[in-house]
Image (tube, rainbow, N blue to C red; front, side):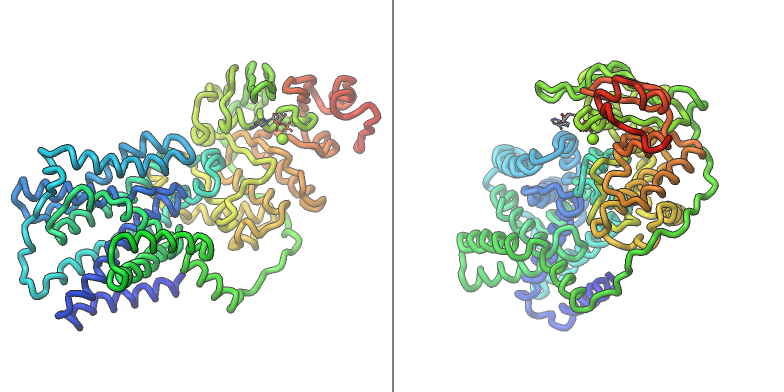
Length: 589
Ligand code: ADP
Ligand code: MG
């Protein structure tokens, strides 16, 4: 990354000097400044569509909104458009918040469609609001007040300055908890919500942040063109170009969209000069988009980076046995007194079509216990976890946690109240490093937290301790996806512990974990329990369950069929019949 910053700095110096060295050639300056404009847009687009993974196909709308805001105000107020350019950014941001608040509540593809629809709607509104926009006639602005001979130079520096600010802004976002949260949303939105990321707000903020500088640039662009009309300002081709630039350069990276914008701009310029006409450009861009998606799915910069790393491989650290367990003194989280009910599931049901996965189930988990939840596959254990943590809504019943009713709360609220969980099939953010995974959880939904550094001092410290605790300290810098399955389970455990939850739901923590790690997991659970953390554990390893847990609850067909101390449950004829089998012989007596 340092190399990339150095290269970017060198390019910036060269671009700053270029008009000084070569002031009398407006054409190359014009080509470059259009490159800056596209780079501003692609870098902004990258915040919502690269970091958060929500593809916008209508992003040029914000350029048009900025241009119209500035055009209308400059003419009305009789001021120079440059003075009101920031208001273009304000309009773009306000519109983004309004659209985002409605559309981004949900997950999935609605967003893509709506962004195109909004672009087209904006064009129609601009055509029809004649009083405001002069309809198809368009708005003509005053000419630049400086001398024609260096016509482009002020615009050149204005767009270059905007580009620098936009890149810095994007880099800053990526370094905050907002940025990590956006990447978490891209990789696994449900999981992000369960570790405390207020996904709706994160997405709306990202969408708004991706609109502001495009709006400002739109205002400057209007002045550069000195004429704006609906068709030119709200063009679908502009949006496609933004997407193409960001994809070609490397979506989700900092400099990829900038590099892509310059590349696309050059190709587009060449097409205009040698092939001419908008049709040929549409064909060219369409073809280029297909080629990029097929052959450069990650984009230019990431592909080049991967090639470089293959040529200069870093030293690989080999997996060793985990270091000795080092539990530190922890302050027990404040919760109900030992023995009081911490989690209370009351008459909860959940159906999938005709199947009743959880059937009018009531279950209490008491403070300070390690409660087991066992039962055959398909008996509804994971579904119950999803109902408790908010991954799924319950059809009926109530869920109470630590004295509050939580079944209507969003997943991140439940996390902030002190509920943590792991997944049966681990759901780490595989593109993040192990350390980033561990610090990804958010303890609250305050703006201050969201905009603070992704890893604050004490968090790095704590992440290291937790990774040491599960014996994976030396893998902190590795990609989470590169670890073995059992190790991923342990990283997920460390991730859950980051927020010091009051209650931790573990879904088959020993599944797929090798025996030496198994002992460690049991040890970690015991240590934490001694420090005041309550557990609800789903597990098929019965000897482990009987050894570790008390009480044990048994589920079958979505109903509770037995509950009590392990000694009693393992001899209960109903449990033997439904789950353990009549010939089951306990391994540990
Ligand atoms: P367990 O964790 O005890 O093995 P689950 O809670 O995963 O069981 O599943 C309970 C039942 O609900 C199973 O029959 C399963 O097929 C069904 N089920 C779980 N999740 C879904 C879903 N998202 N859609 C449809 N059916 C589901
Ligand atoms: Mg399950």
